[in-house]
Image (cartoon, rainbow, N blue to C red; front, top):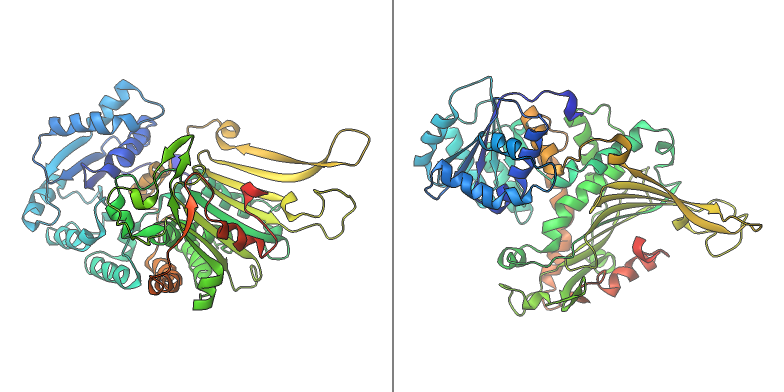
Length: 492
């Protein structure tokens, strides 16, 4: 799965929602980086769609204002001008079938060119867009469709969207994107597991005590209050990002790195997740909501005071879950999942805590603790892998101190830093599906989450547990781990 070794075919990338935040903040800056690194075919074109009538020059002025500021690295004026020469704009109302013949004409009939339709729109538009694309012949085999999350609000609505889309596109044409799977450190996790004899023999219940997966944000809901209050952290983060990371950690070695071989193993993990009873939801989940506090030394309001949030909202901004996998490799190993807004730091990490040594030769507070040996895979703000162990402190005593080995990918390999969206966009153009969710994966993820969601909805009179903005969540989150005699990584 080496992007550098695979040439990019000629392509047309059609960006639905071309004036929106996702296109300006993520997609165009990522495509620019690929262009500047000479990873895009010279014949590649970008066609942005929007409801507003504007000329190409007007759209490029908008790109200059809204997208260029998000190019954080490797900006070059000449490369930017060259990149913008790829871009065109077409007025298309995604819900108006009468606008699609003009789109088909703009794309043209070129079977040797890949056509990527990126649906950076609300999910309720997906079915209509796909139907309209099919009506003008833009569902032929060289067309690929990228579906952004969230794909539904529950299992039934997700199935309905997928059923509708499947009427017009085959499964192998659909790319359900989760940008966390494009992060370099996630890819390196698979390399560390499956390419090194050092870790694979230890990657099982006999040697791993627990696994912690955290995605924390220091920001609040901002201007997305109306959307977020109807979604919540369980739908927004757990059902997709956190469960996909869990699958990468827990999957069996695939027979190959082909797309279905990888996704078959991820599906087995999702099917092996122990389902939740009503009592399990009460004992093994924590639902929280932030109240006023301070982040980075600045006072911030609570969730109920955010714009667009009802004063009596019970929507969760924090979730912690104890998950268990019922198979031979992982039986008895707890997987702790955690995500939240307005937390102390912006952080995404996977922590593997190894078990104690079988017999202690040394005395002292650090001896006999499973936290002595741990592997920490950090996904953000920086991407790195750190292995912790105990070593003797210099001197004439056998006093132990923690030490670590640190792998900085970019210093080690001296290559350009590519972000997750760039990696995934290149994979779509090249037709690589391994890092995208297959429909049966999505079904199993929703199936596991649904009992939690339903229990929380049925207990509508029980508000989420409050936590102060700028902390690591409600105290119940720490208590969830303390029952197993452990603590979150930052508390150790």
